[in-house]
Each structure stands twice: as structure tokens, then as C-alpha cells.
Amino acid sequence: MTRDELQKKIVTILVDEFEFENPGLSDNLRDDHGFDSIDAIELLAKIEEMLGFQISRKEKEKAMSIRTINDILDYIETLQAAHTS
Amino acid sequence: MERRVVITACSAITPIGYGKDSIIESLQQGKSGVKPLRDDGLLTERIHSKVFGTVDYPIDYGFARKDTKTMGPVSYYACKVAGDVLTESGLSQDFIRSGRLGVSFSSTHGSPTVQRNIYKTFFNEDKSKFSAIGAVDYLKSMVHTTAVNITRMFGITGRVVASSTACTTSSQSMGFAYEMVKFGMQDAMIAGGADEYDTTTVAVFDNLLACSVDYNDTPECTPRPFDRNRDGLVVGEGGAAVLLEEFEHARARGAVILGEVIGFSCNNNGGDLILPNLDGITSTLKLALADAQIEAGDVDFISAHATATKMGDVIESQAIDAVYGGSPWVLGLKSYMGHTMGTCGAIELILSLYMMEQGFLAPTLNLEHVDERCAMLRHVREVTETRTGTSAIQNFAFGGVNTCLIITDGRE
Image (cartoon, rainbow over all chains, first blue to last red; front, top):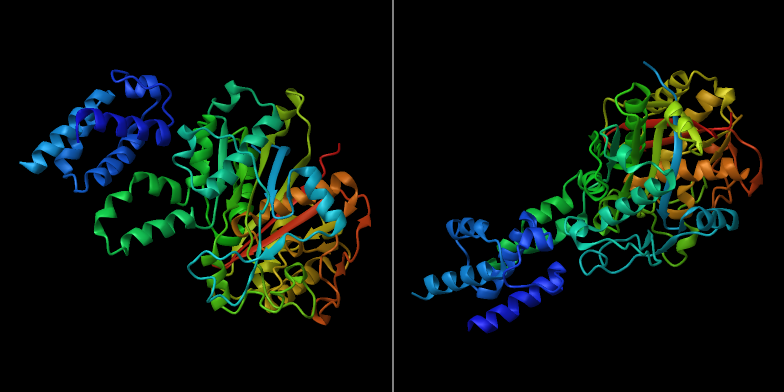
């Protein structure tokens, strides 16, 4: 999946299921969209489903430093790279 | 410190309507909220009882996702009626967030719909779905889910009581809230209960041979409290909340006083967890009168628990007869909507308030031939125009828990 395709998918999820309005790639998820720890856990489950493999506990903990949509995309790309290597 | 506790707002979502006007209309016109059991794809085929007290009308919730993400269906009912109560009360935002307003609210199971989805995932062959069981599922289905979704939605910072005791859940919620305010721990409490559409509860009672099965083709003809042809209870759904407030606090802010809680009792049978117990129930009724410091003759009508089970109605009749004789009117409100489980006490208290305010008593529906073992009571058989000022609301639960709340109409 290219970065553009990934971005489209994630933004669609954030708009459709997390009620984001006009999300920007560098917006602060918490401050600008009220995204909290519960949302983070929910999103991780969706990412796991999308990727089709189980994300390890250690990898999930790394997600806690995510602040922006760009961070989410970087995170997923890192997961994909680690899984295919 | 003992303070007076008044009711300054109430709201109920019931199988016979949402809101005062619609509920009163149903009571006066004898409308039943019992409908055919919906197929949930799981148990319905196996269940003998095919009826359910159903909330089958649309409700405009208007909740934002930031709130709903931790809410199962049961919390939708809970938050809706709690929001109604706060709006009706006119309480200030400062007070709501002061720590002097608490929440006493619960349900029978948390959210069975959410729990069922968790178990479906557990037993799914496709183990990759495991991560779908998350923190949110727990927040939606834990026993105190209704209470804390209310605190979250409205920013309430006071005490939380979430006593889940099956059919006495909301009676205890209101009773414990009454005591919180009476003894000065809080100045006001939102109190009540909710339960969502749930066929597993029907299955449990069905297997205990306690559910109605003879009226599957005529749902409005069951349940039949005190009737000799009654054949068991009908499970129902709903949500109800009252605002209990310290009298001087309510008066100082000019609140409309709808009623007053003057007594509460709660005890346990200390033995069998299912069978009704005459001594335990009789004792509860007496304890409530003692707490209210009134005589049996002061009570105008009794909202009986009256689930329409074969033994339960007889034992309750005997207890009422032992404590009150035949003087107060007796009615069974479950005849209109079935047994709304954790919600029933709050719904029955609110309907009692409505009847006191409107000056009528609603008859027990489907009471065509009174069981001779229940005939010593003064049953309400038709819509009766009468001014009443004091009512006892009785509820009994699996686990041997008994409660009784005594309220007055609040007129000075």
C-alpha cells in the first residue's frame, strides 16, 4: 500500500468512525479532534484488522507517542516494513 | 443530621411511552406495551415465552460520539433520562460539577448486547478478531456503566453508587440516594435504573418456568398480576431517573417539588435466592412504614411488585394483608409493560407520582378474575378518579432482596 493509499484509508476511518471534521495531517489528534486513549485503542484494533496481522504488545506501546495523522501513517509504515522484512 | 428529601424532576422511557403525557395516556386508556419477542438470531427459537415489554418507538438521543463511544444500549436509556432530569431540574452547571450532586444508578447486567458480542468474538474460529475485545467493551458492559456514563456526559463529580441487585436495582438506587441526601452526604442525587432489550434474561426466567407462555399470540393479555389465569412474568426494557434533592436546597432555588421520599427499607430473606419469602417481605413493608414514621392507614395506594408469577403474587398479597389489611388501593403496573428488571422500581415510582398529581389510579391490566388467594386486597379494577397523597412502591429481587419506598405527593 502506498503512503497516499494508506492516508486515504486512515482519514476515511477517522472521519467516518471517529467523527473527525476536516482533519489535517499535522493536526494534534487530542487537542484538535478530542482523540483520547480509548480512541487510540479502538484505532489500533482497526489498524490490526486492516494489516491482517497481530501487532505485538511492544509495538502497541510505541503507538502511545502518536500525536498526528502523519505519526499514524509513519507508525503503520514501520509496522508493515517490520512485518515484511 | 436528618434532612427531608424531595423529588424535583423525573423522566422515564417505558414500553408504554416516553415522557409524562404519553405514559399517562397509556395508563388511562389501558394500553399495553407488551409485544411479540424479536428474533435475535440466538435464543429466540428455543424460548417458550414469545413476548417482551418493548420500547418500539424512535428516540431522538442527539448524543455526540465522544460520549457514545463508551455506551452500550443500556447507557443510551440511562443518559437520556438523566439528561432529561437535569434539564427539568434547572440545576446550575456550578452545582452539577460541585461534588454535592451524585449519581445512584445501575442496571441488571451492564450491557448484555455488548457482552454477547465479546463472547461471540471469544468463541469465533477466526482468532484474529481477538483484539476487537478492548477497553471500550468493558466500559460499555461493566455493571456501573450507566452510572459513570452519566457522570461523564454531564461532568458530575459527586458520589457514585451502582448497586446492581436484579429487580430491586433501581429501588435500591433511589433508596440509597435518599439516604445519601437525608444524612447529608450529598445535596442531590440522580437516581434510577435502566435495562436494554435482552433475550438472555427471558431465557433465564423461561428455564425457571417463570415466564408467561400462554399468551404468545395475544401479548397485550399478559402479564396478568393477581389474576387466576396468570402464567408468569414478561421481561421488558426501559430507563428511568428521578432527581432527589434536599428540601431546603430545592426550596431556596425555587424548584418545583413533585413529591417527597419519606421512607425506605431494604432487607434480605437470609435464605433461598429465588423463592419469595413472606417473613422477609412483611418485614420490609413494616420497616418502610417505621422509617417514614407513619401508620399503615396513612398509605393511600400500593404499587405492588406483582410480576404475575404463580407464587410471587400470592406471597405479596399475604404480606400486604398482614401489614395493611384491605385499606389501601393496590395496583400492579407491570401489567402494562412487563417486568423492566433493573428499571422497574424507578418506573413504578414515577408512574405513582404521575397518578398522584393527576388524581387517578390506573387499574391492574388483565385482572379479570382475581385469584382467591389475592382477593383480600383492594385491587384497582378500573381507572379510578381519586385524590391520593401517599404511596408505597414495593420491589423484590432474586437473591432475596426486598425493598419498599414510601413517597408523598409533595403538596405542603
